[in-house]
Image: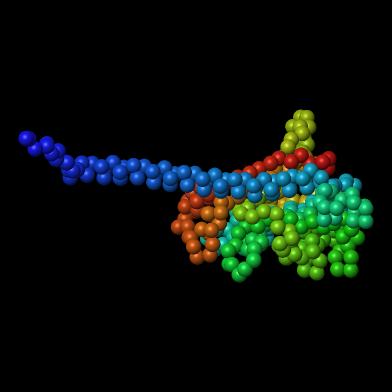
Length: 321
């Protein structure tokens, strides 16, 4: 009787194990690469979405206010004041300062006057013209705790019609400020009046991570240098061509603009305003906190901003001025 045939089991060879390990390593490397790329894309999309929300929030707010701009001709009152912020050097960390910010103050008829109770009896006192101010700041966002984290905050302060027209025992009326007595900006920011510091409280928070915002006024002028008068539109950008101040009065425009047609601009008519802003990503704001990051030169700073910022703009047609 023959013994049953026994099959000898054969194990993996060293070469087969090495090939299997190599294939596994390749697969793991590809998976890690795909996961890392997906996470990077997700984080960038999240940053873009948040930046878009912040940017559009500011754009929408300023657009609504400017579309309801209130001005009157034939008087010496100041109706709009835009100045390059004299505190610009303080807006930002030691490694990255804002490159552009204006204090913008003007009269408008917003729908959120009287704390959003416009048209409601006993809450709406009948006025519609308010004074509104925008300013950029470097401060802690609205939060609880003792965190030293700061970011660029855009503030909007709305003064209801009652105070705008009449003032009270503490506040001077803002409507009726003339160039001969004072500027609208100085009255609004006076230490004993509408102190600029009060603009920076949490009630006036609009959006954050706004690295810079600028405004360019489109001024319609008449060029009489040729054989026949030509109507032109001159862009007056805050911070460009020596422009640090742009004020609209009932008698004309006061500005230190020194570009083309500078004399004609003074008697021109403002027809539109271009709002431009730059929003930083959360990662960028985190990196520019005090002591975290320094830039060896302006090129490195420009590359950092190009990679971690998003630009928004909108042209607003202004009511007849």
